[in-house]
Each structure stands twice: as structure tokens, then as C-alpha cells.
Amino acid sequence: MEQFEGKVAAVTGAASGIGRALADAFVALGMKVVLADVETTALETAATELRAAGGDVFAVTADVAEAAEVDRVGTAAMDVFGGLHVACNNAGVSGGGLTWEIDLETWRWILDVDLWGVIHGVRTFTPLIIASGGGHVVNTASMAGLTSNPGMAPYNVAKHGVVTLSETMSIELQMTHPEVGVSVLCPGWVRTQINRSERNRPGFDPAVEEQVDESEEGLAALRKLVDTSIAEGLQPAHVANLVVEAIRENRFWVLTHPEWQGMVRDRVERMLTGESPWSALPGTELSGN
Ligand SMILES: NC(=O)c1ccc[n+]([C@@H]2O[C@H](COP(=O)([O-])OP(=O)(O)OC[C@H]3O[C@@H](n4cnc5c(N)ncnc54)[C@H](O)[C@@H]3O)[C@@H](O)[C@H]2O)c1
Image (cartoon, rainbow, N blue to C red):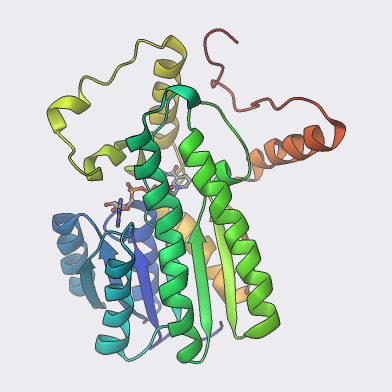
């Protein structure tokens, strides 16, 4: 997609982090943007700031885990702006623990948002983009969608799902609607609020967050590593620029951290040589291993 000005984008998870940076970048390119997020106050702040910067934006409070709420985002794009050309299925949450100890509610919450949220977005937005004459779908996965690092099984499962969903639909669109491109965004660490995802968890009680069970020494260290790495991560604006380039050049893979690519290569080599999986991400060694 070469022409951005006057076109319409929808971004889920637009109130914070990468989603907010994508909205900023689209507004700067002269696009009209539907901002969607489950966190209403932060969403309103984002909309106010983007309008102050001259943006033509429309905010919809929506939980991507609910298909009907994602449908409302698509309807807003068509009713308010008359079309849809770029859809970023970006909303996401993280969490984890040891795979066999993670409670089912946590599994369901992360898969509902990170995998079903993207499925809902693809189902709602792709036909609208086709009906609007073409454009691009961007699904936010993660390097966790290309590797299997410990302590985050639900996140890994969801993000691997987003990668293969994106590959599959990319092939299908090349065969049927080549006017619609697809990109999958696989970032490493980015300076956002992803490590504070519990804030948007249904039934979240801030008092309980302070009492997270960190009796598992390795997991406590892992949590600390994630906090530090995110604080030192890439700026979301840099990631948004990479996404805009990928849309412009119709490029599928958006990997933000070249230095992490060895982990992907190592995983595939182990698969092909029959070696057991191992994590090469420094600092992720769990106690007992
Ligand atoms: N930050 C990183 O290091 C990193 C790395 C790889 C992938 N990602 C992915 O990037 C995406 C954006 O996350 P971020 O890092 O900007 O984090 P963030 O927490 O700053 O932003 C995520 C946004 O999603 C929203 N959200 C959460 N649950 C939602 C729901 N059910 N419905 C609608 N909106 C919801 C939040 O309110 C928030 O505004 C996620 O998919 C995340 O998995 C982030």
C-alpha cells in the first residue's frame, strides 16, 4: 500500500505502547484512525492527544476477546470514516508461570485476548478491507511466536497461533485478493506497559497484584529480567515506523530485533536434528534446570 493519506486505519490496543505508537504514525501520515481499547480512560486520553495533534480519530471501547465488540470497531470505521484500509490486531496481554501450574483462568484470559482477539479482528476487518478496495492487515505476534522460552506458555501458544494464522491468511489472500497485504509483527523487548497487563484482567484487584506468589525462585528472577528488559527495550515509535515500512513495501515479516534471530535458527536446527528444545534467551534459566 503506497498511498496512506486520507485512508482509514483501525488499531486495537491503541491506548498504550505499540498500539498508541501505530496510531501516532498513522495520524502523522494523514490517515483517519479508529482507536480501540478495553481501558476507557487511557483510550480517551489517547484520542484527546491525537486530536490535539490534528488527528481525525474515533475511539471505541472494545474488548477484543468478544467478537461482537470487535465488530463494533469495524462498524465504526465504515460508518464514521466510510471505509477501512489498514487493520492492526495489536491488543495483547502477558503472563505465565510453570506450564503445568498455570490456572485455567490465566490460560483462558491470555488466549482469549492474544489469540482470539486476533482471530476476531481478522474475521471482522479483512472483509471490510476487501470491500474498501484493498489495504493491509497487521497482526501483532512476538518473538514468543517464533521461539519457546520458559515461564510463558500461554503467551507462547497464543503468539505461535498468531504467526501461523498470519502466514495462512497471507497465502490465501495472495491467491484470492492480492490487493490485501498481511504483515506479522514479531518484536523483542519494547518499552511499553505489557508487564503490567494484569491491570486489564477481568476482576483485577490492584491490592492482590502486590502479593504475586514469587516462591519459585527462577520465576521471580525471570519476572525481574522481563521488567528490566522492557524498561530498556526499543521505543514503540521505532517499532511503528518498521510497521509503516512493511505496509508500504508489502513485507510479511516484521522482526524488530536482528540479534534475536539466532534463537529462531537454533530452534529450527534442533527440530531438524532431533535435539531437545532449549532456551538461549539469557537469564531465563529456571531453578532446577
Ligand atoms: N512490549 C514488548 O516487549 C512486546 C514484545 C512482543 C510483543 N508485544 C505485543 O505487542 C502488543 C502490544 O502490547 P504493548 O507492548 O504495547 O503493551 P501495552 O500494555 O502498553 O499495550 C497493550 C494495550 O492493549 C490493551 N488491551 C489489553 N487487553 C485488551 C482487551 N481484552 N481488549 C482490547 N484491548 C486490550 C491495553 O489496555 C493496552 O492499551 C501485544 O500484542 C504484545 O503481546 C509486546
